[in-house]
Amino acid sequence: MVDGVQYTPARMGRIFVARVDHGEDLLDAMREILVREGVSHAVMLFLGALREGAIVTGPEEPVVPPVPHFVHFGGGWEVVGMATAYPGEDGPAIHIHGSAGRGDRALTGCIRGRGETYLVAEVVIFELTDLPVRRTRDAKTGLVLPDFGG
Image (cartoon, rainbow, N blue to C red; front, side, top):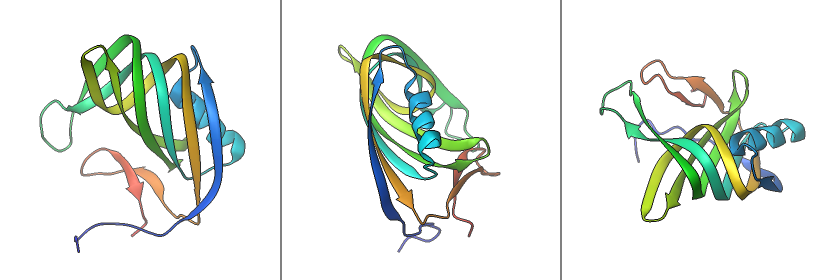
């Protein structure tokens, strides 16, 4: 057993399948579906391509709180990844991680800010129900983390 691990059971709710078209923002599209369908908690899978975006590929230095190291990419990159969504201060708070590649270059990390779709991205949203988790700012790390209310 690992001390300090927070967890809780949940139930599977509805499943949504979406297509995000060329020029649309991937994160905005995910958030819009969650809000429109009243989904408060979810796990999401995605694949496709982004024309441009930014990805955090770790910290600038391994200190707490971390300063994120951003890498901006453009020109059409293949992407695959997953995300979680929990209620946050301003509606659905999405934490999205993925890998992006173009040619012989690949990046993996936390996709942040605008992620403009190139051609198409596909998203599958798995709603989670009976889940008391929220996303709140952690004082120690400065990160917005799942809060199990413990």
